[in-house]
Image 1 (cartoon, rainbow, N blue to C red):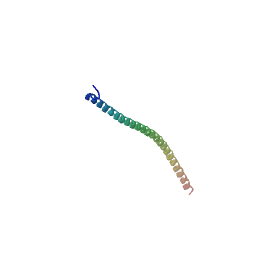
Image 2: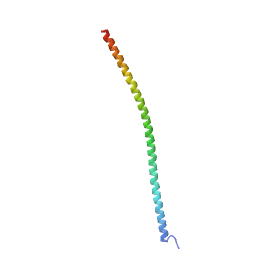
Image 3: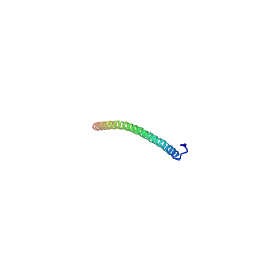
Image 4: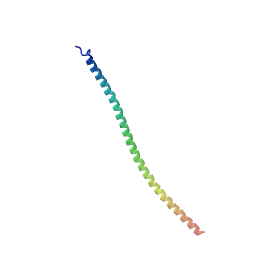
Length: 90
């Protein structure tokens, strides 16, 4: 008896081929999702690093603002003092 002509064997072969095809498609889909996850992870790391740099930059700007504010107050006080001296002369 030839197994290739046996309808039961042909059905098994067809089912096996269908399942293998489905496995290949599922593996391809899985690979796409894993690649997307890798890209998202990399983007999250990049954004975290960017946020860290921005926080450092912001701290430096806040410190500079404080220094400039102090300089403004000191210069305003100096100008006020000089104006008082001019008023005393007159």
